[in-house]
Length: 65
Image (cartoon, rainbow, N blue to C red; front, side, top):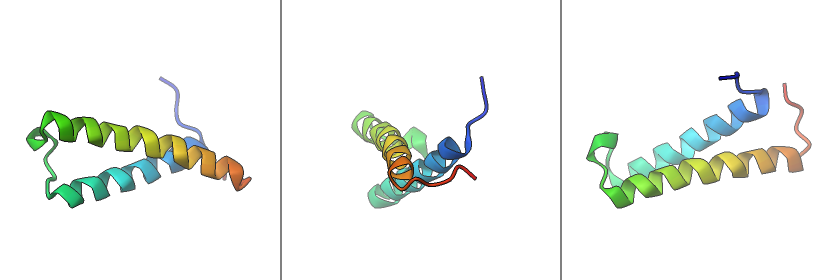
């Protein structure tokens, strides 16, 4: 497995923030306590925000350092 580049590291952090906010919003912090629907929404949140963050960074012409 390769290391994330700076863009991906920022996207990972952004996705983590969104996923954390999702968990706070439903009042759960233990992933084992999530229902199947909540688990799917959690994963969708992570994947979606990772991609959105990469797109924002590219659109802003943000330097990767």
